[in-house]
Length: 491
Image (tube, rainbow, N blue to C red; front, side, top):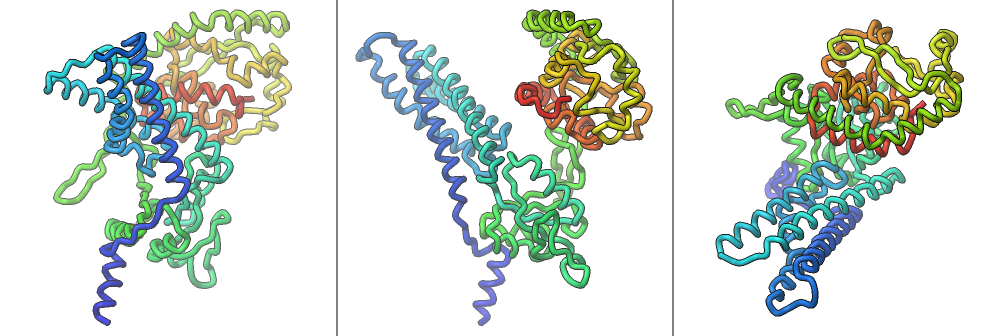
């Protein structure tokens, strides 16, 4: 009996591992990714061979034929070394692409080093074409595969089952968030609440329709019972370091992932680092870099990109101006006072989308606003012209703000430029939106546009202010295209 008790005790802390089989869809996705990676490098090697050695293969080109065939196998080996097929990175995006790019760099560097060390003559033209092209094609293939996965997840399949552990309010917020953004692939299948809410007359049976199956101490058993892939622990004082470590031991045997949401929210990227002090891991948070060299680089990038966009889009700008003029809806450009960085006011330029007396009629429509907070938005605004409705749907009315970017009053990416009357209603924390230049697009643009609540809009703007980088700007600009073409949330 003592031996049995010992085995059970060891199993309870993860010393007797019992690895579960990965989900079938995960295996399928990894196979698809591996096949696409193989074909991408095979195609790149073939293209490089044809361009570098045109005509019928000669005897001296045989080694490159072998290399072209072997290169995809080497590519897969390097990708596996870089953990590019880890289930935790499936559909994540940046981390998945980053590992593919790193694998491409490692493979290129390895070929160069081996060729130099062994004094092997390698056609540089072949290497320069094959490896970068193969890496690029692999990234494109992963991107398309990721989009396919997101579409499947919107249909409710290819989801990871998650047990949420935390207080009722935070769990409820998480469930609503993940239901709005199914592409994350996390389906809250069960909830564990504090013991006071699990038993007794006041016991909670469900949260947002998700059943409550236990308290904090039963999280591991609940995860095993429902076959969960992850346990998500939200910020709560009961789940301290000791409790989290014990939970990690308990779910390790079933290969269940543990994710923890820190109490410090909306702080990401390079601002966070872990610094051990006397064996205690401390989370160090750097102050956001709002000035200095990065600000100069951002300003230079904004102006060069905006000026280039004006030159490329000049025919479209001229066409829109003609359509507005033909419609006789007033002046082509609409000028309005907005508040920029540091509270300084400036004149923003937009294509006219409303009748000339729109501002006078606004007072009559205040009670019909479809948004909460200080914003004023109406889905079917009677002041919008026929041409203006199309311009607003695809955000074409915002294009003249490129001139504001060139003048240094706005940035390509940043918080939404507010009206002076909106700023007058700001609370204390909301003023932080004004420490950077407002943007032509931003997190609010790619996250729902006018469909967002006032609180959500503010949260996204503050998140951008605290975590902005040039890489984040490029990511938002890339996502803006799909948000604009969908036309959702624009009115």
